[in-house]
Figure (cartoon, rainbow, N blue to C red):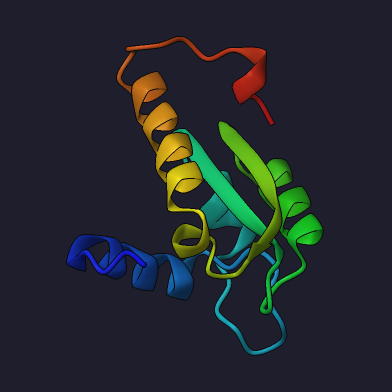
Length: 111
């Protein structure tokens, strides 16, 4: 289990602010806010999330975010960054490498 304070803080921000398809009453960013995003975005979704439908969330993210990579991780629970820290770190590292020009985006990185 990862207990790094920075990772935990990031998790709290993501949990509170970036729920693409959550049950009634949960916080969800408005469509206009997502459409306005201009940065490359990585959306990793757990196949077995307890709080959202990953397929619905993936469709919403793909429709609203301009530069997005969406992946539903098979077998993963909502604790995906903890369940498969290596996968999460690899995907985040790839996104940062693309953003910083260390590698070019390929069809494998597209939605």
